[in-house]
Length: 190
Length: 319
Image (cartoon, rainbow over all chains, first blue to last red; front, side, top):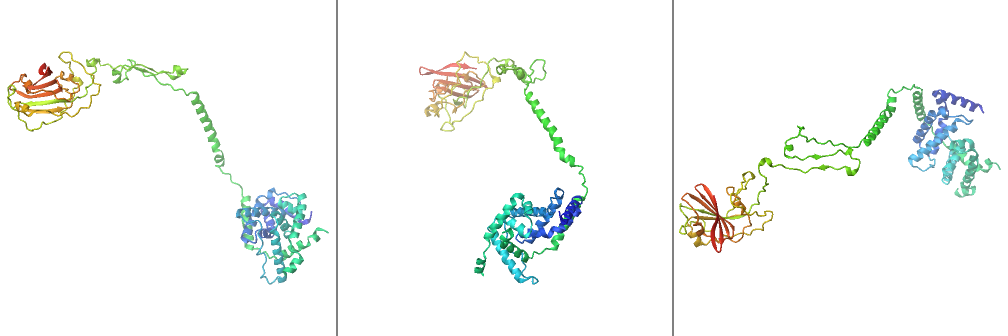
């Protein structure tokens, strides 16, 4: 177990005894969870804020039921946020995948304009690819490449078995690879 | 070929997209959420105050409802086991002083047996004794039903002068045509009924409904009227002759013949009339029967005339 995980474990134990300690976990993971929710909700800031707040509130009220299993605490927060996003989709009767449109601030002059342009093109390719994937496959790609979670953490978030998640991740990547445009297609487009 | 090299193009796409994204974190949102969590933490740390009414609010339905349900079940069971109805027997014994006036009239006793004593349906019957009405206090053994009114013919002779009526007596008519009026005779009351003093009379079945009576036209010849020396008013009385003063007439209740009897003034000459004669009324009972009412000296006499072999003769006299 790494030092970070040992430190996080102590922090969780303290939060179970003293709720005030939970605010340290909040400060540590707020941005990470907010960005995840932001991507899932298509860049709606207000909705992302509400869902993120509800996610940490749920975590506070259920912290005593949490059992540390050697994974980062963020995995449990992702799982709560994942369920809240699904609830929001059901409640707002929206389609499950909302492409990100406002995740890129092109007016920011401090960033490399070429880098931003590449990012916009890459995001468009991702949006087009995700239109042909189901919700679980999209979620696997987001958790793996945006959030950087391991297969075990992805299984924890999505409620899948660890033995099954490896096959599922491989099939999703293979399917997504077939959906990406080839270099020949990109040359023709340019 | 490892996973990373095989999916390098996909990984590159996501890395370029993530590197270029610029998700702004609103510090106000974050602070607001933190404040909300702090408030929630304070609530979690605050000691829980027990609601003094919590126990009652939680268990009051059970505390009240269970005994009430048991009581309701007990009442239903008790009612089902004691569903027999007892009807008290009325006390008509002489010792019972609560019987009112109807007990003096009705001597019958309606006895209602107690249902609880009857075990079989055939035993559950009500004994009803016949109703006996005692008229002994009235002194009359017969029940008199008021007779149905019958129409009669009525002629009124009002002499202008006293003395016997002769064929030469002039008759003065106020109206050339005979006046037809209906005078309902008084209905005899049961208490004024008296036995007739005459010979036994024939009782007619009054239950038989009389045939509708056609309108009777009066046939009085002018020359005949002119010869009667008194004012002659002929009336048709459609009621029966129910005269209180003479029960004998009361027996002539046959349907009146529509044919007017051939009764003229010459027959009236046989009557005994004094100077104090006030009125003579002729009642046509049938075509061969006429009753004459004579009021003389404030007394009323009745004469019964019958036609036999073409001639009218006085057959009865009632004083």
